[in-house]
Image (cartoon, rainbow, N blue to C red; front, top):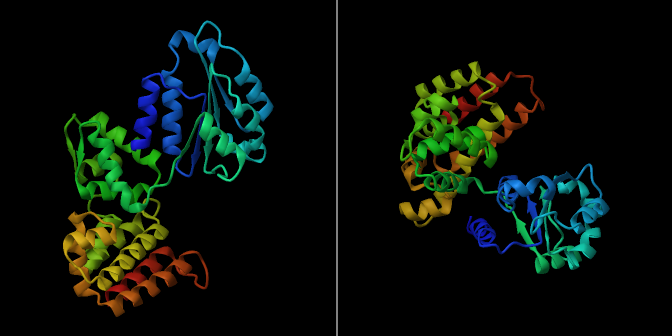
Length: 333
């Protein structure tokens, strides 16, 4: 986030690089930087003649260099944005000659998603010297809740921990999807609202009572009645509650519980740090650790692996509903 702020701050100050090479596994920030350059570097009246978007699948390196070398018309600079530049990966090193001596009146932006330049090769070294190389890295699961809070805080909103966790478990790690849903909520709710699980249920369609977060909690408490209610709801709504995701989240939970058992320092701050979870949820791990000793946790992880194989159609002809019911029965008994 700090690196993004610095890039934006430099652009605002007029310290604009001739080349921006935006690469990495997380497309969200690549798009954000590219969109910011597209929207702000030129005045609206200048964009018609001096702003061009090309796509890697339709262009060659020679096309890009030719466009980059032309002079702006009635403007201080031109902007050339190459989207899906990863489609040029086989020939990307051909940009070296241009990168060594870039046109000072051109802002060349390359959006190189899901791939990275080899730091050992010349192009990376040259662009790092004459322009800017930014790597957009995927966030770890335990970083997503903080990311959601920071995004909302910047727009004067807050979110309760359970609501953030519901979003993460429903939408996964795709920042664009999460950001889109946050934008919807901010359109509906007044500034300075605290987003809660009811807001998520009413506006995004995730049940506040029947979701993987509540299932995990019920399993940890060995609340058999609640577990059965949730898995019956999942069975009736399989599209919104895919078995593969439920198994994955339960596996992460019991893996964390195994780590919990191995901790010498079980203070809440230590547990939160070592497990990578919000302190708000720590009491759940203390409860679950009493219900699931280490030996049982290891056994549960084996059950989860077996269910994962079955869910993919290997060695079993059970329905998704039956696999889930059998799995939860084994875990709880």
